[in-house]
Length: 119
Image (cartoon, rainbow, N blue to C red; front, side, top):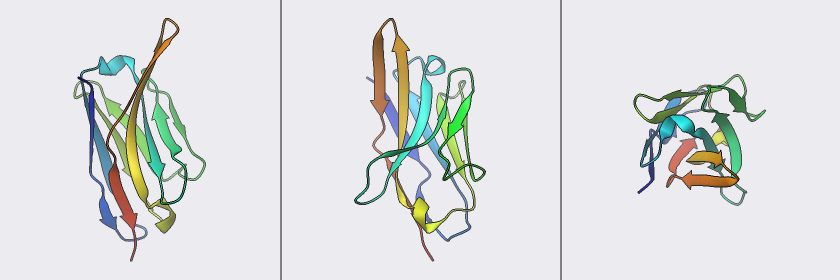
């Protein structure tokens, strides 16, 4: 059974930092592209950052220079370091695992972790 378990969310003041973690089980983690997405109230889910199996990263323009995605294949874990947080970063953050193989796609989501940026 595939599980993606996020942790590290919480309440932080503007300008503060948080580090999200996503521990994966039930998949060959190193083969998967991993990503973080977020969904604010009343808005669609949006991409925050992705990291390929080879370590290449991609970021939404709104978080470039502030957020850093990384992965530890030995721990089957992906991280999102969030610095200089803004109120508009408030959302539920979801971990995603994606693998495209032989014409098929394997795509999994975590349950999400709430991040609230407020004074």
